[in-house]
Length: 257
Image (cartoon, rainbow, N blue to C red; front, side):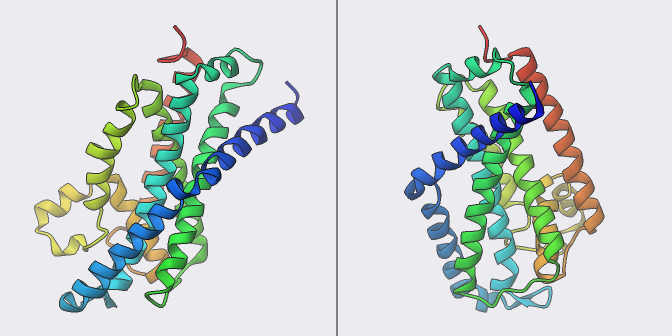
Protein backbone atom coordinates (compact mmCIF):
# COMPACT_ATOMS: atom_id res chain seq x y z
CA UNK A 1 0.00 0.00 0.00
CA UNK A 2 1.12 3.55 -0.70
CA UNK A 3 1.45 6.11 2.08
CA UNK A 4 -1.67 7.90 0.86
CA UNK A 5 -3.70 4.68 0.95
CA UNK A 6 -2.48 3.97 4.47
CA UNK A 7 -3.47 7.46 5.57
CA UNK A 8 -6.93 7.10 4.02
CA UNK A 9 -7.39 3.76 5.78
CA UNK A 10 -6.21 5.21 9.10
CA UNK A 11 -8.46 8.26 8.76
CA UNK A 12 -11.42 6.02 7.90
CA UNK A 13 -10.98 3.94 11.07
CA UNK A 14 -10.57 7.02 13.24
CA UNK A 15 -13.63 8.67 11.66
CA UNK A 16 -15.71 5.54 12.26
CA UNK A 17 -14.62 5.39 15.89
CA UNK A 18 -15.26 9.10 16.42
CA UNK A 19 -18.73 9.03 14.87
CA UNK A 20 -19.55 5.90 16.85
CA UNK A 21 -19.15 7.45 20.29
CA UNK A 22 -20.50 10.87 19.26
CA UNK A 23 -23.66 9.25 17.86
CA UNK A 24 -24.44 7.70 21.23
CA UNK A 25 -23.39 10.73 23.29
CA UNK A 26 -26.05 10.18 26.00
CA UNK A 27 -24.19 6.96 26.86
CA UNK A 28 -20.59 7.98 26.21
CA UNK A 29 -20.23 11.71 26.90
CA UNK A 30 -23.02 12.83 29.24
CA UNK A 31 -22.66 10.29 32.11
CA UNK A 32 -18.99 11.11 32.93
CA UNK A 33 -19.82 14.81 33.14
CA UNK A 34 -22.71 14.15 35.54
CA UNK A 35 -20.68 11.69 37.63
CA UNK A 36 -17.76 14.10 37.97
CA UNK A 37 -20.13 16.90 38.93
CA UNK A 38 -21.49 14.72 41.73
CA UNK A 39 -17.96 13.87 42.91
CA UNK A 40 -17.09 17.56 43.05
CA UNK A 41 -20.26 18.51 44.90
CA UNK A 42 -20.05 15.70 47.44
CA UNK A 43 -16.32 15.44 48.07
CA UNK A 44 -15.21 18.96 47.17
CA UNK A 45 -18.22 20.98 48.28
CA UNK A 46 -19.56 19.05 51.27
CA UNK A 47 -16.63 17.06 52.66
CA UNK A 48 -13.79 19.32 51.45
CA UNK A 49 -14.36 22.18 53.93
CA UNK A 50 -14.09 19.70 56.81
CA UNK A 51 -10.77 18.38 55.48
CA UNK A 52 -9.26 21.79 54.81
CA UNK A 53 -6.28 22.45 52.59
CA UNK A 54 -4.09 19.78 51.02
CA UNK A 55 -0.67 20.56 49.57
CA UNK A 56 -1.51 24.26 49.95
CA UNK A 57 -4.75 24.12 47.94
CA UNK A 58 -8.38 23.65 48.86
CA UNK A 59 -9.52 20.04 48.83
CA UNK A 60 -11.77 20.72 45.84
CA UNK A 61 -8.88 22.11 43.81
CA UNK A 62 -6.73 19.16 44.87
CA UNK A 63 -9.11 16.42 43.68
CA UNK A 64 -10.18 17.97 40.37
CA UNK A 65 -7.01 16.95 38.42
CA UNK A 66 -7.46 13.36 39.59
CA UNK A 67 -11.14 13.32 38.61
CA UNK A 68 -10.32 14.62 35.14
CA UNK A 69 -7.59 12.02 34.69
CA UNK A 70 -9.90 9.25 35.93
CA UNK A 71 -12.40 10.25 33.26
CA UNK A 72 -9.77 10.18 30.51
CA UNK A 73 -8.53 6.74 31.64
CA UNK A 74 -11.94 5.08 31.81
CA UNK A 75 -13.25 6.53 28.55
CA UNK A 76 -10.15 5.82 26.45
CA UNK A 77 -10.20 2.25 27.74
CA UNK A 78 -13.95 1.74 27.38
CA UNK A 79 -14.10 3.04 23.81
CA UNK A 80 -11.50 0.65 22.44
CA UNK A 81 -12.47 -2.45 24.41
CA UNK A 82 -16.12 -2.18 23.39
CA UNK A 83 -15.53 -1.17 19.77
CA UNK A 84 -12.85 -3.76 19.03
CA UNK A 85 -14.78 -6.55 20.74
CA UNK A 86 -17.89 -5.71 18.68
CA UNK A 87 -15.76 -5.83 15.54
CA UNK A 88 -14.44 -9.22 16.63
CA UNK A 89 -17.91 -10.45 17.60
CA UNK A 90 -19.36 -9.45 14.21
CA UNK A 91 -16.25 -10.85 12.41
CA UNK A 92 -15.70 -7.52 10.64
CA UNK A 93 -12.19 -7.30 12.11
CA UNK A 94 -11.24 -10.44 10.17
CA UNK A 95 -11.88 -8.62 6.90
CA UNK A 96 -9.48 -5.87 7.97
CA UNK A 97 -6.81 -8.34 9.06
CA UNK A 98 -6.83 -10.24 5.74
CA UNK A 99 -6.73 -7.02 3.71
CA UNK A 100 -3.45 -5.44 2.52
CA UNK A 101 -3.81 -2.94 5.36
CA UNK A 102 -0.84 -3.18 7.78
CA UNK A 103 -1.86 -4.24 11.27
CA UNK A 104 -0.14 -1.27 12.85
CA UNK A 105 -2.52 1.04 10.95
CA UNK A 106 -5.49 -0.87 12.39
CA UNK A 107 -3.96 -0.60 15.83
CA UNK A 108 -3.26 3.11 15.49
CA UNK A 109 -6.78 3.72 14.18
CA UNK A 110 -8.52 2.10 17.12
CA UNK A 111 -6.15 3.67 19.65
CA UNK A 112 -6.66 7.12 18.11
CA UNK A 113 -10.42 6.66 18.44
CA UNK A 114 -10.00 5.86 22.12
CA UNK A 115 -7.72 8.85 22.61
CA UNK A 116 -10.26 11.11 20.90
CA UNK A 117 -13.05 10.01 23.22
CA UNK A 118 -10.85 10.24 26.31
CA UNK A 119 -9.69 13.77 25.50
CA UNK A 120 -13.16 14.96 24.46
CA UNK A 121 -14.83 13.71 27.63
CA UNK A 122 -11.89 14.95 29.70
CA UNK A 123 -12.28 18.43 28.18
CA UNK A 124 -16.01 18.44 28.98
CA UNK A 125 -15.29 17.40 32.56
CA UNK A 126 -12.72 20.21 32.75
CA UNK A 127 -15.43 22.69 31.75
CA UNK A 128 -17.81 21.22 34.33
CA UNK A 129 -15.08 21.58 36.97
CA UNK A 130 -14.72 25.25 36.07
CA UNK A 131 -18.31 25.78 37.26
CA UNK A 132 -17.31 24.77 40.79
CA UNK A 133 -13.74 25.94 41.14
CA UNK A 134 -11.26 28.41 39.72
CA UNK A 135 -9.04 26.22 37.57
CA UNK A 136 -5.26 26.51 37.85
CA UNK A 137 -2.85 25.76 35.01
CA UNK A 138 0.80 25.42 35.97
CA UNK A 139 2.05 23.95 32.66
CA UNK A 140 -0.05 23.56 29.52
CA UNK A 141 2.67 21.49 27.80
CA UNK A 142 2.78 18.96 30.63
CA UNK A 143 -1.03 18.83 30.76
CA UNK A 144 -1.32 18.07 27.04
CA UNK A 145 1.53 15.58 27.07
CA UNK A 146 0.34 13.59 30.09
CA UNK A 147 -3.30 13.43 28.97
CA UNK A 148 -2.41 12.22 25.48
CA UNK A 149 0.08 9.63 26.73
CA UNK A 150 -2.35 8.35 29.38
CA UNK A 151 -5.16 8.05 26.84
CA UNK A 152 -2.85 6.15 24.47
CA UNK A 153 -1.78 3.78 27.24
CA UNK A 154 -5.28 2.82 28.30
CA UNK A 155 -6.57 2.64 24.74
CA UNK A 156 -3.87 0.03 24.09
CA UNK A 157 -4.87 -1.80 27.27
CA UNK A 158 -8.50 -1.78 26.14
CA UNK A 159 -7.60 -3.35 22.80
CA UNK A 160 -5.62 -6.13 24.50
CA UNK A 161 -8.58 -6.82 26.80
CA UNK A 162 -10.89 -7.00 23.76
CA UNK A 163 -8.60 -9.48 21.99
CA UNK A 164 -8.76 -11.92 24.88
CA UNK A 165 -12.45 -11.37 25.67
CA UNK A 166 -14.75 -14.24 24.74
CA UNK A 167 -18.03 -12.62 25.80
CA UNK A 168 -19.49 -9.22 26.59
CA UNK A 169 -19.05 -10.00 30.28
CA UNK A 170 -15.29 -10.37 29.77
CA UNK A 171 -14.89 -6.76 28.65
CA UNK A 172 -16.19 -5.53 32.01
CA UNK A 173 -14.01 -7.72 34.25
CA UNK A 174 -10.81 -5.68 33.93
CA UNK A 175 -12.50 -2.27 34.37
CA UNK A 176 -14.42 -3.50 37.41
CA UNK A 177 -11.78 -5.50 39.27
CA UNK A 178 -8.53 -3.87 38.08
CA UNK A 179 -9.06 -0.43 36.58
CA UNK A 180 -11.47 0.95 39.19
CA UNK A 181 -9.35 -0.04 42.23
CA UNK A 182 -6.19 1.32 40.59
CA UNK A 183 -7.80 4.69 39.86
CA UNK A 184 -9.37 5.10 43.29
CA UNK A 185 -6.09 4.11 44.96
CA UNK A 186 -4.05 6.28 42.60
CA UNK A 187 -4.10 9.40 44.73
CA UNK A 188 -7.25 11.07 43.42
CA UNK A 189 -8.60 11.90 46.86
CA UNK A 190 -5.41 12.02 48.90
CA UNK A 191 -1.67 12.57 48.83
CA UNK A 192 0.45 9.49 49.43
CA UNK A 193 2.54 11.59 51.82
CA UNK A 194 -0.34 11.06 54.26
CA UNK A 195 0.25 7.30 54.24
CA UNK A 196 2.70 5.31 56.41
CA UNK A 197 6.03 4.63 54.70
CA UNK A 198 5.15 1.01 53.89
CA UNK A 199 1.92 1.97 52.12
CA UNK A 200 3.68 4.76 50.28
CA UNK A 201 5.95 2.11 48.79
CA UNK A 202 2.97 -0.08 47.91
CA UNK A 203 1.21 2.88 46.29
CA UNK A 204 4.20 3.49 44.03
CA UNK A 205 3.54 0.11 42.41
CA UNK A 206 0.31 1.56 41.04
CA UNK A 207 0.96 3.03 37.56
CA UNK A 208 -2.12 5.26 37.76
CA UNK A 209 -0.50 7.14 40.65
CA UNK A 210 2.14 8.52 38.29
CA UNK A 211 -0.43 9.74 35.76
CA UNK A 212 -2.61 11.49 38.31
CA UNK A 213 0.36 13.14 40.02
CA UNK A 214 1.82 14.30 36.72
CA UNK A 215 -1.49 15.90 35.74
CA UNK A 216 -1.85 17.44 39.21
CA UNK A 217 1.58 18.96 38.69
CA UNK A 218 0.43 20.34 35.33
CA UNK A 219 -2.52 22.06 37.00
CA UNK A 220 -1.32 22.91 40.50
CA UNK A 221 2.46 22.55 40.39
CA UNK A 222 2.51 19.95 43.17
CA UNK A 223 3.21 16.22 42.92
CA UNK A 224 4.22 13.28 45.11
CA UNK A 225 6.26 11.84 42.24
CA UNK A 226 9.07 13.47 40.20
CA UNK A 227 7.69 14.50 36.80
CA UNK A 228 10.48 12.79 34.86
CA UNK A 229 9.76 9.50 36.60
CA UNK A 230 6.07 9.73 35.74
CA UNK A 231 6.73 10.33 32.03
CA UNK A 232 9.36 7.59 31.88
CA UNK A 233 7.06 4.98 33.44
CA UNK A 234 4.10 5.91 31.23
CA UNK A 235 6.26 5.84 28.09
CA UNK A 236 7.66 2.44 29.10
CA UNK A 237 4.18 0.99 29.54
CA UNK A 238 3.12 2.37 26.15
CA UNK A 239 6.05 0.73 24.37
CA UNK A 240 5.36 -2.63 26.02
CA UNK A 241 1.60 -2.59 25.43
CA UNK A 242 1.99 -1.41 21.83
CA UNK A 243 4.39 -4.28 21.12
CA UNK A 244 2.02 -6.79 22.77
CA UNK A 245 -1.04 -5.47 20.94
CA UNK A 246 0.72 -5.51 17.57
CA UNK A 247 1.99 -9.05 18.20
CA UNK A 248 -1.55 -10.19 19.01
CA UNK A 249 -2.87 -8.69 15.78
CA UNK A 250 -0.05 -10.14 13.71
CA UNK A 251 -0.68 -13.59 15.11
CA UNK A 252 -4.46 -13.35 15.04
CA UNK A 253 -4.62 -14.27 18.71
CA UNK A 254 -8.25 -14.62 19.81
CA UNK A 255 -9.43 -13.42 16.41
CA UNK A 256 -8.72 -15.96 13.72
CA UNK A 257 -10.09 -19.46 14.13
